[in-house]
Length: 89
Image (cartoon, rainbow, N blue to C red; front, side, top):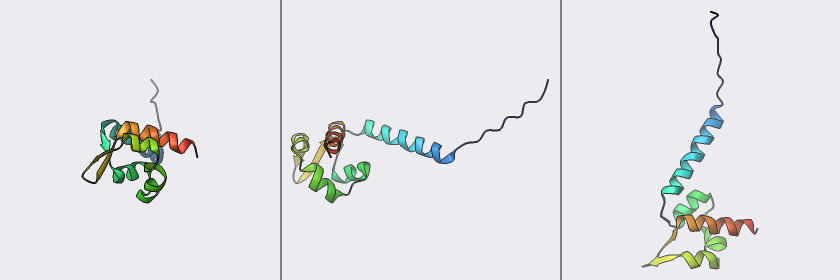
């Protein structure tokens, strides 16, 4: 039998991006509600930009939950609405 010589080249950057993407998907799956700070982290948009262009939209206000000056949005619905809003730009 001939000895097999196998070389495996891994793209570390691509593997890292894939893992980060999967982790982000898993985090989104497990979130029930998000606040403005978490929304800013997940969308990579500043809280000020979100406040002026996304949160003030009627569709986001319709799913907003308020209690004592705190605001939350159901995570899945918020991401769907944000996708709709940004696709209109």
